[in-house]
Amino acid sequence: MRLATHILSGYLLVLVIGAFWRYMPFERAAPDIVALYAVYLGLQVHRLLTHTVAGAVFLGYLADLLSGTPKGIFALTAGIMAVLGHLIHQRLLVVIRGRLFTVFFSFFAALVAAFVCFCLRAYVGFLPSSGAELSLLFGSALCTAVFGPLVFAIAGFIDGRFVHRQRSLEGL
Image (cartoon, rainbow, N blue to C red):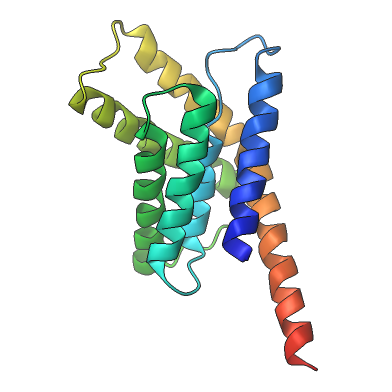
């Protein structure tokens, strides 16, 4: 149920930001909310990594449907980002604390997700035509860094509510 709630909140956030982003002056550089949710889910694996990766892939697939990208690019990127988030958590015991750390972590995660997307697009023969596309990736990473604290706060709130509910049920 927790994973389904994260997928629903991520999808709603992608939908709302996608609807209102076109009114912003930097229309083409959009935040990568799916990568942030995928990394968060990878960092917070409770039981099985396979369930988390499947949830991240499903959220990426929903983002593929909304964005009009080639089917599977965001889905595969989200799955890879969830696994990378889990590997980071296992090796470095990363605990996200503080807004500044969250901003830097979000920026780094967005750059890694952009690199993975670039590699996948190159693999299928969908390479960017100019260097402007690469600067667009950097702008998207900056936008993602700005939205990082919001996404991690929403996801942390959801996890907190589920932990609170589980503890109250155990007390009965």
